[in-house]
Length: 374
Image (tube, rainbow, N blue to C red; front, side, top):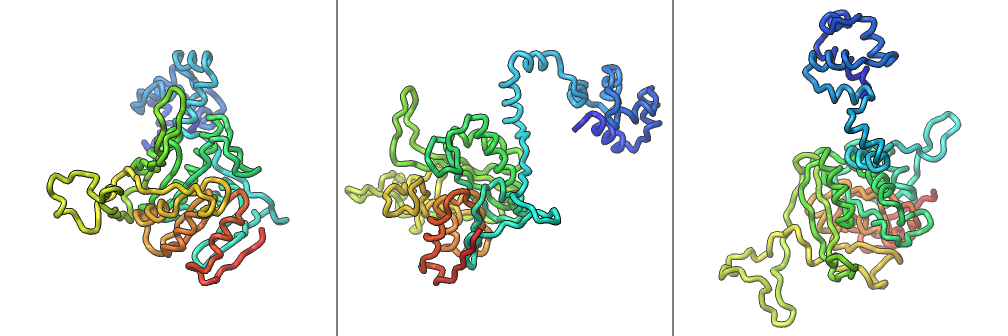
């Protein structure tokens, strides 16, 4: 917000005219008018007078006027790149408005058409940053995002999975802010990624959503990296827009030894009092199987377990809720939504054939599918 806009807002909050405020500040009202329109810059004396009148800090108003405190200015002069990056990362000052491709002759935006649809959902083949601005505010009950992890993997020609860290975060902050916008009040947002990235994402999301859980997904193997502990889990962020409208706590089977069949955990002699339906789910999930064998994959690239998505949908959605996934991938989210009778909406920038083939079976759709050409 500019200094002039801020001054006008302060003046109107007090129901002061330009003349009345000029009298309090002992300056000409015409000069205040030029300050509000931005045609002149305030002097340090005027900034101090305004700060005193409205009980604000001089530093806050100086920054609004484009004047950096000496110590801050020194940091910018000596470390301009690092300072700009930290500010953008902290406040997510990125452009999240993306123009849709193509326009009609009358100047209106051309509507995107789904490449595939079922009775419950629609799939679009396009960049998520092209598609997200077309989704209305507060339209999704649950959002699940599993973006590329920036690990130099090959997802196709349209996906660059080897970005500089700053650029990867900038890109991620754009779609994260859009996901917050399209989420309904009481809706839930899940983001699946490496802890390295999710610590940044969580800081951004906490400014507009309510933190619920950092869920650790055991990846069953250890990855040797010199000079570091072996990473053995992915993280699943769970945020809601205010108080969750839906929250179910699933129960899981009591873990037992695969060799002797006995309980792995000691329940202090209270085994008989445990709920026969199983244990309450914790925020560490050890029972999500990785999808590695090509027999169970619908595409060559990484693919999530259906069990993971079914659990997410069980926790935070009900039948006929709308589930949104901006990174279609192998279509696991849409597949789970069909199985659990949820409506779904999503997009995928690369080849959508694996998703279409996966959802074209008769397992739950009875063949009632239609396809469209982009």
